[in-house]
Amino acid sequence: MRLRRMEGGLLNLPGIYIHVPFCSAKCPYCDFYSLVGREKTDAYCAAVTDELKTLRRVGPLADGLKDRDISTVYFGGGTPSFVGAENLSRLLRAVKENYVLLPGAEITVECNPSSSLVPGFFETLAAAGFNRVSLGMQSAVGAERKKLGRRATAADVETAVKACQQAGITDISLDIMLGVPEQTESSLLSSLDFALSLGVTHLSAYLLSIEEGTFFDKKRDALNLPEEDAVCDMYLSLCGYLKNNGFRHYEISNFCLPGHEARHNTAYWRDEEYLGVGPAAHSYLNGRRFYFPRDLDAFISGMPPVDDGPGGGWEEAVMLALRLDTGISLQEIKEIFAVAPSPSLPAILQQYQSAGLLTFDGDRLTLTERGFLVSNTLIGEIIDVITP
Ligand code: SF4
Image 1 (cartoon, protein in one colour):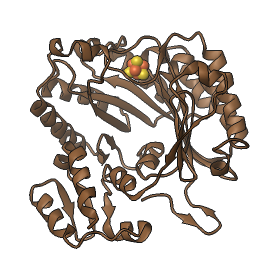
Image 2: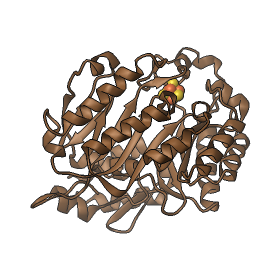
Image 3: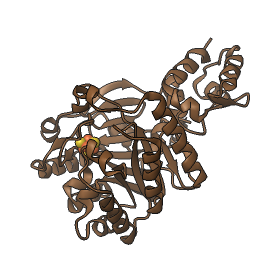
């Protein structure tokens, strides 16, 4: 469930996250840290390479990385594919030169279909060692994609998936968005039909959230967003549809064919440790959290990561673990964190179970799909009643 410290070292092996903060345009709903254009790509790649070299040896993260191998690498953004396969390969080489990757390490890169449609793009990635690709599709319906500011067509997505598979990278995830302006349950199901027809192994389904300061935030009233109840129905339909097609709903927003869980992200939900490199990237090592500020120039100039305080408390571990279909065990919480659940907890959990929000067998509790829909409130309430 979380990092366990044992005599003689740490059990889990950290993953590395590299934030690539460049995009071809800013999507109207996006508040991720990303800049439009590629002008500073070379300086950025040089800075990431430098950080990968030095973080292990000096600075606040060195203790947490010493003598530890790496189990996963994840390039996210931004749009990593926008900087090109050669640059991504160069960054992965820098990871390999400075860290020992376990045999079979999962190495993922987020790609945009448009910037992947370059001859030889996926072959170059495969040759460098990338073995998993996450493609931003959001919707297969042209009008919905347009509303989201996505330039690529569904045909581009199909071409990108096929090119990726032909290059030998068959572990492919597609992002799907729920609650898109003018989306209906039937348009969502047509996107899912399309996604599954491509033979992908993983789907991530995110609810569109309107973040402060984004273009969508300013235009909220004109967006014609589906009603909240309709979006909840879409989520439940999506869960049913994917389950009927052999996908495991292993995390609130994530679904996979058996054996194709995203190992890197699953480690986050298990509250395990990771190193994050790049502007806006976060790290959790040696029980402490760090982050690089959302500032590309500061990152390029070598500004060190900022200490963000301790991590790994029981509330955090419970909050993350309840996102997974494996849930939490009250006995484990007791043993690992020395937290004694309140004697009234089982009765309260039975009430939630009767309401169809969770399942509880006397020790392990997991949220149901209806529970996932209200997870923010529900998880907070569970944490409140765990302790006397
Ligand atoms: S491609 Fe992704 S990171 Fe870039 S602007 Fe769009 S949503 Fe944001």
